Length: 129
Image (cartoon, rainbow, N blue to C red; front, side, top):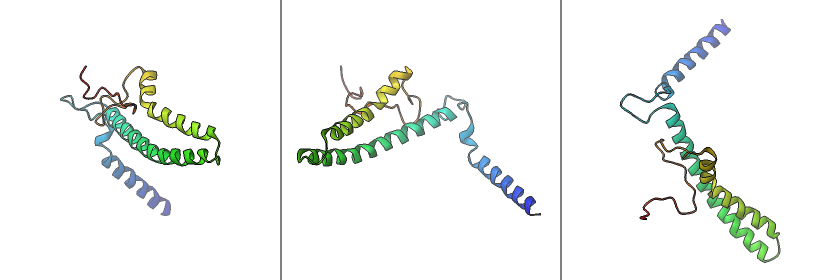
């Protein structure tokens, strides 16, 4: 009887989760050209998470860069640590451009969150040429 209760609870949980996640589980886009396919939703969430994590790392890395800069000026830390942190932040800033170059496409361009871009300043937004 105990095993039957466990199996019943497991099946009920699987049914509830299937109902909850049913609309996001369609791999094809909806009729009418909507952008709610599974891959577009996943790409949008990945882009959103990437952008948010990148901003958090920039804030923490900026404080670390200032702290290590003061310590290196006063001779408490090696300059290689300062240079390593600065290069690491530069690589993070260029991560979007590196991914787009390596894949030959713009990651997340069809997603709801927009495309992944680098943070060096020239994103072709609002620039009149």
